[in-house]
Length: 318
Ligand code: SER
Image 1 (spheres, rainbow, N blue to C red):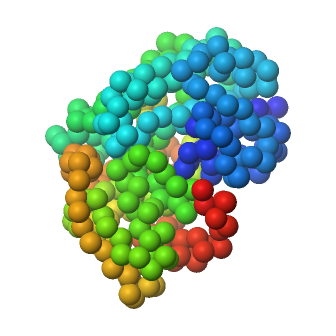
Image 2: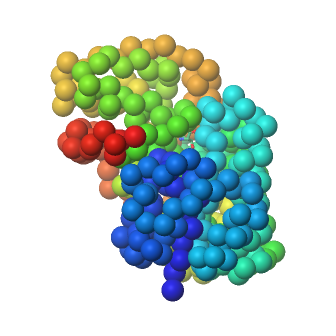
C-alpha cells in the first residue's frame, strides 16, 4: 500500500502533484501538508499543517499515516531566498535533512526532492549545460540546491535511501501561482494578458531561460518515481529540459492569440539571478535512463494556458 506525504503541497508544483497523485493512489492515500492553510486544490483529501523544520512533527505524521513515500517540496525559491538568506539556508537544508533521516530510519520506500537549474552559476556552459557541468551557483537558493543534491546522493550511497530528484527549469502552470521565483514572470504574464493589462517584466527582453510547462513537469516527476531503481544512474539530480525562451519571445507567442497584448521592461535584482543561469540544458541522461521527452513547446503551451485559465474560478486561482 502506497501512502504519500507531500510537503509544500500548497505551492505551485505541490498543488498539481497532490491532485495527480490523489487520482493515481486515491485521495485518502495522499497527505498534503503545508505551513499555509490549504488551497482548494489540496483541500479535498487529508491535509495537515506542517513546518518541515519541525522534525518531530514530520516524524509524527509519517508514523500516524503509515507513510511510505515523501515528496518533499517545501522550500524558499530563488528571489525570496536572496531576501532572507538565513531562512533559505535553514528551511531548504534542515527540511531536507529531516526528511532524509526519517526516510533512512523508517525505511521509507522512496523520496522525491526537487532541485533546479539554479545549481548552475555563471561559469557553467550556457547552452546545452551538461549533466556534470561545474555548478558554482551565485545565489543562496542555488547553494542550497547544490548542497541538497549532495545530501541526496550521500543518503543514497551510504544508507540506501531511494531518493530521486530533478533539476526543474522554470515551471509554468495556470492552476496556481508561484511565489518568489525568478522565472515567475512567465506565469504572471498570462494573467495580465487575459486581463488586457500591459505586463511589466522584471527581466530584460532578451533574458533567455530554460522553462517547462507544468504538465510536462508533472509527467517527468511521475515517470522518474515509477522508473526501476536500477535504471537510475544519477543520484544527485537529473537535468531535464523542454523549452527555452526570452520575455520577448513569450510575449510574441501571446500576441499571436491576443494581438493587442503589450509588454514593457523594468529589470530589477532578479535580472542578475537570471543572467547567472543557463540558457538551455542537456538532458540526455534523463532521456536515456527513463525515457524523458517533453510534449509542449512555447506556442502549444500558450494556447493551452489561454484556453484553460479563463475557465478557472477565482478561488481555484488563489
Ligand atoms: N523557478 C525557480 C525560481 O525561479 C528556479 O528553480 O526560483
